[in-house]
Length: 324
Image (cartoon, rainbow, N blue to C red; front, side, top):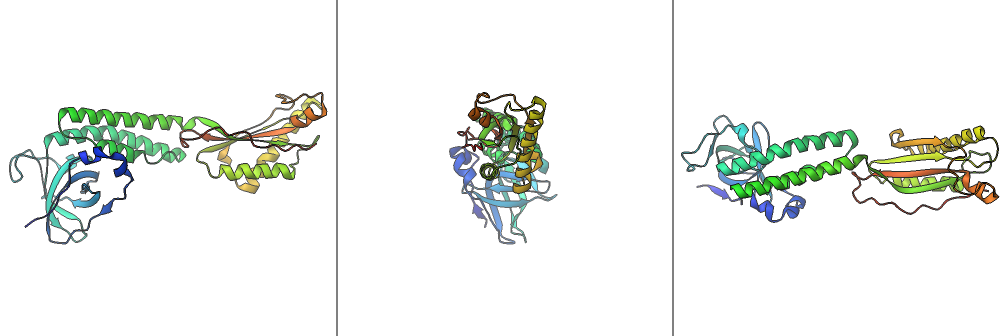
């Protein structure tokens, strides 16, 4: 007599997609030699096996062999069309008969599924697979957003048999792919998260203790971020020669970079832009002592990728240090 492990159709995922994607799935270990009949949804597939998940989120590893009978339903013990094992795809709602093997999986003798279920699963898989490949490439290139494959799989698993349900599920999968593409496109969209200003004494490119403290705070914030870039720009007051002031502003910017890199091990790939503007872009009146003190500065902007940090917002400027 078969020990039946009943698993509901793909619609179980449509009822509460968020709950299913967040719950921890468990792997079932079957008794060697015991007969089983399992119903569920294919959640992963390779050349010689696949994993089927039941209604309560328990996974069973199913092993295929050359003697496994794979057919569309036409009566469980007869009829139906023969399908190659390679035709089994993720998202397919099916039932399997077989015996437990020595590894705790199920050695399949019969695999059955509806023609409509197969058509729906193939349609969804053809849309999800290119998106998965694109996400993988993006994550490898820039340590980009994780979790997208699970989101798309949840959408694909919501598909059900029937022409109307199949179309609705396909539209939902396309919407998921579009949302993923938007997040990937936003990876290169950087916004300012923190803006620190460090001031310098006359004719000096030496960091003050207060300036170092501000840079310490910025570095600690940066190391908690994904996909951040640091932009450093130096400036000078109108005191002295214009050419000399431009070089002085460059040295001030370099002093900030040296401190961040040498003291806090900020990777070079995280340094976006560094430039000395000299007397340009004054923020205060150069005809006053106080104004010139404000213009002798380096601006340090911590920017983050909107694609990798979905909830980023521009924070208020941090406190500045002013050395007279």
